[in-house]
Structure formats: C-alpha cells, structure tokens
Length: 221
Image (cartoon, rainbow, N blue to C red; front, side, top):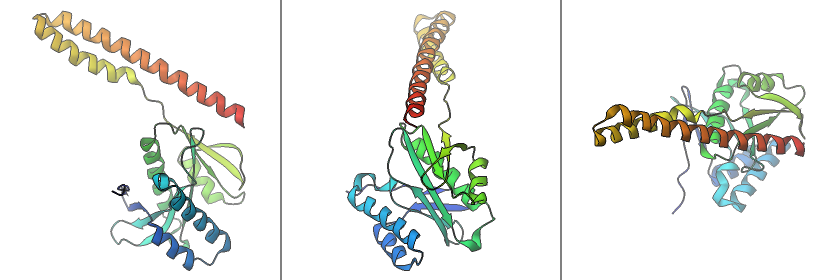
C-alpha cells in the first residue's frame, strides 16, 4: 500500500508533493537548462529512493482558493548529519506578495515535526539574490558560511522545555495517588517531585544531545 503523502495548508496556500508524472511533465515544459537538470535530479531521487521520496520531490505551491500553481519548493534529499537543505522558487508574476516566505515557513515547521533527527535546515542563495536572503532572514535563518551555490543560511530546531510538560504529567499522577491514599496533599507533592525529576532529566538529556550535534557540525565544516 502506497504511503499517504502530506498536504500542508497555510493561510493562503496549499503545499503538496508532486507525483512522478507531474515532475516529468514539468521537466518537459521547463526551458531553463539548470532548472530542468534540477527537476531531473529530484525525479531520479524519487525513483531511486521511494521510501524517502518526500525529501526529494518538489512540493507544489498553490493558491488555496483558486488552486493556481504559483511555484514550488522542497528538500535536496533526506536528513544527513542532522540536517536537510531546502530550495524554493516562485513564478515571477507572484513575487512580492509574501507567498514564498509563507511556504518556506510552513515546510520548515513540517520538516522539524516529521523527523526528530533534523536539527538544522539549510538554504543557499545566489550572491546577488537579495530577495531570497531577506526571506531567510525574516524566517530567522542565520548566515553560516559559503555553500556550493553561494552564501549558506541555517535555521536550528527550537529548544523544547520538558520541565513544564512533566510537571503537568506528575501533577496528574499525584492527584491519582492522593485520591487512592485519601491524602491529596501528599499525593500532589509526590507527583510534582516525580514530574520535576523526569523533566530535569529530559531537559539535561536533550541539551547534551544538542551540544554534541552542534560540536560535530562545527568540526565538519
């Protein structure tokens, strides 16, 4: 049974991965040599690695109300060394409306949620592409040296505070213990203690992992 591919909806857009047939069609219609080669590379990835095709396929950027195709975006392969690279493009007549910013924001958030091993999303821009640079800076990507295509930018996964989550979890356990013992105050104290210990342990564990990934990334540059 084929894996159901996601559809992302934003305030004004619908984003969905192209099928192999749609990619083949856009290759035939594209006249720009470099762009045609890029789509061909995406198609090759989709066909060679079906399990991970979502990370190779271009996603159609369509206006939500009209369903009109206005551009596409996507990743340049699955997670590698805790990072993926995103690319994007929009038809000239739709530039200047914030659509690309909206789409990149949505797909970036989707990627972080879809794969917990992704800690960094990278993007490269041509040196003279100031609009692309503004989009990335608006989305809190930061400069990260030079890539193959020009300046490289990176956005890091936001940190999650586990303490409040486990405190709530401990509180619910404490209420159950308190009701069973008929001593609610003792139960609540026990529950909050459990939540505090679990939350602190989880926060420390994730901080260590993040620092290890950051260190490894810095060493590999």
